[in-house]
Amino acid sequence: MGSLVRREPLSERVRAIKPSGIRKFFDIAATMSDVLSLGIGEPDFVTPRHIRQAAIQAIRDGETHYTSNYGTMALREAIADYLEGRYGVRYDPTTEIMVTVGVSEGVDVTLRALLDAGDEVVIPDPGYVAYEADVTLAGGTVVPVRTYVEDHFEVKAAAIEAALTPRTKMLLLGNPNNPTGAVIARAELEKISALAQRHDLYVLSDEVYSRLVYSEEHSCIAALPGMRERTILADGFSKAYAMTGWRVGYLCAPAHLLEAILKVHQYAIMCAPTMSQAAALQALRFGEPDVRRMVASYNRRRKLMVKGFNAIGLPCYEPHGAFYAFPSIARTGLTSEAFADKLLHEEHVAVVPGSAFGLGGEGFVRCTYCTARERIEDALTRIGRFVQRYS
Image 1: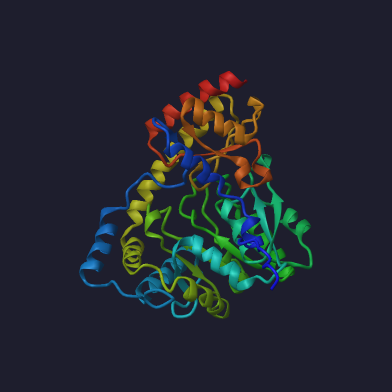
Image 2: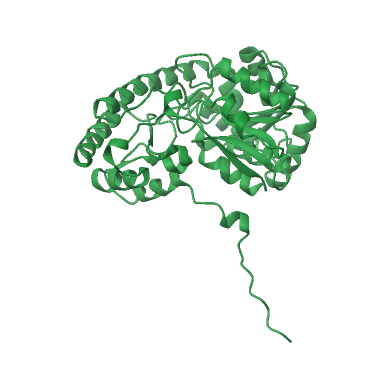
């Protein structure tokens, strides 16, 4: 009997995926003392008390069982009302809204449901680290489209169109963008919508930072003419309501698309946590004052950080959304990876190298301003000292 051939235990798809560049520096920082972290995109606010109390009450009332795969009807109805009131786009809560375990799950199951092997997905570069990995795991092929600081990292319809091939099936847009804080202006979004219709493309729009927009109104692509039927809208509660640990988001899409996405969701997840859905319902019904209070605080910190970076010689354009600054580190002569590594070990400040978000991020670092003002000021002092040494 011949010997067995030893096979590689890991799939090619998993082997092709790089570990998260965000978590790498977070994990190193966790082993050190006196670290000021500007690395993780998580609100420093605690979830508002009345939202926490709603989850506690749900547990006390015995709401500890599975919900529908789609989520509780009360939450889906509230999401439908919220989107109609905010953007004028209406979804049927029965068949066109699904509650997910955060936007991260929503993006993952959408790609797995819609992509076949070799289908191409156009993604702005720099872009969120999970997008490329999710497309790869779904069997698709990522086609990055560079964005530039001269355009405030806003993705352009012309650049997207130039990247299209007969294999292109979908656009994956983060709007506002992580890591750059870029917001796609309505006029540009209309051009992107027109090309999506012209080339019969689907759009997966991650709008989890939609409430964190500072200098203009957020435009929802699904609300534009002709886009509702070809858009999968992903949003959630993590950022706007300081609910990262609750893991609750939602997808909105035409029923025939959502029915297919539900197949993946129900076998992988079953449903989002019941008590988290109760908290999310409370957030939508009564959390608007909390959102406005937190966004006003982020805005003050945004201005402080951008002004601080420019003052110490790291040019930083003004991000219009999310809670990230993306300063250029070109004057130091360091790669973004080396900059982040040396800054962490020499000054105990954690940032994320721009290269973690794509080739277009090289020469920049991502810094969150969702931390206390005094910590931002201290971090800027340390970074300024560091920049002086390497300039």
